[in-house]
Image 1 (spheres, rainbow, N blue to C red):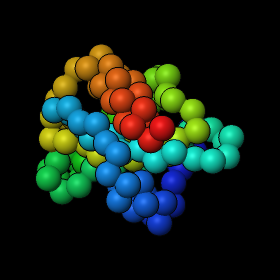
Image 2: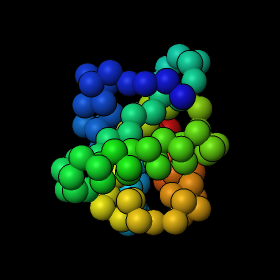
Image 3: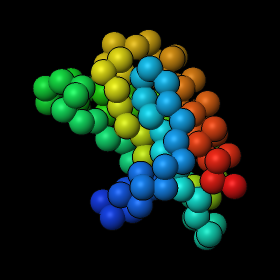
Length: 107
């Protein structure tokens, strides 16, 4: 899992290829090269204070590390307020399911 630049994050979001659940929104944009999947985890102020935002990002990054992600795609995962309190199994399931669904839309 490699990081994305802010410029690439804006490009992925502007492609409008996304899938959503109550815990997160996953944006995707296909890549032409054969580098591994790049992922950015974002939590805005709607999540809450700094403590809640950081907790949401930590939990999502842990779910991403354990998930099987599609290849040749850049992903931006936006946390939603439910991310902070949702069971970890739900986060893991949503990361895998939504990243696959968003990646399919890039093809």
